[in-house]
Length: 131
Image (cartoon, rainbow, N blue to C red):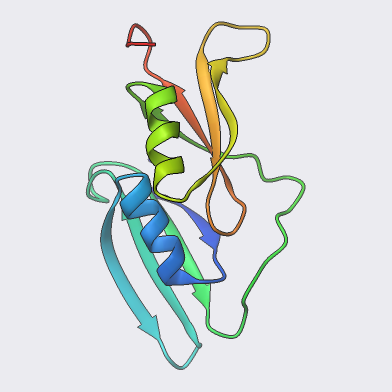
């Protein structure tokens, strides 16, 4: 068994695709419209689906926004330098909600950004990389 994908419902697919591809550097792997069901599925990731887990962005055509459930945590992405990643995302218009720094009760350097729908993405600095 292996993890295939995590699905997020998004209110504006184009805005979300720009965030995940332009700001976080993922690739659009596939996209399919389902007119009878009035929804679109777009899969994004850093590697092909056969090689690793990806994100499935689900856009229901008649829904513009969702509330984020209390059980949702975050998506985690490893980065070389969390502070530089935050600077780059902010320069591109992204929202940094927790600047890079050591995690509470630990030494791992982390940061948090939000996608256009308010989903949190944790940026975890690779151990031993620059500060």
